[in-house]
Image (cartoon, rainbow, N blue to C red):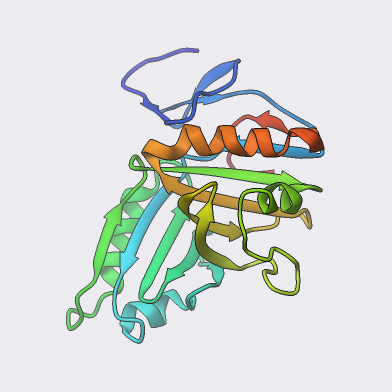
Length: 209
């Protein structure tokens, strides 16, 4: 690992080998297991709050409980009534904050906060991702109830957690978002829950595969 300046560190310990990617110390491990769990904390994470029927809501265009991607490729998550989580490329937080702030018309109160370094984000992908999460979360994760593009907040391993179904190339995949202080705990819980399905830790890459 080459460090030429200050680097950020995820709350989740990166499995060796490690490298610096976009200013973050990350795992360079590459897993091809049918079930994988990877730390995605370096992704930019911006929280927007505003009126559920206001200008920002109209411009974001994503209702509570659903997701979408804007013209910049940012994942927009309707994480609560009048609340959105914007997930973008590493290092893009300032641009995301600027765009979200510019969306306000000045007549409604809008809060835009960069959460990148204050939250943990992980992705679990593969054939048994649903079964693994079902062991620690009581939400029905079937296609009928929570199809691709669904977002919800629930208890996962007794933690208040945001879960986003965000399939990749037709493969079932979930983003799991929690407070930074709980990141390592939740990562370890999911690894343990997926052990019977052959889960392996996976390294960080962007764009995601």
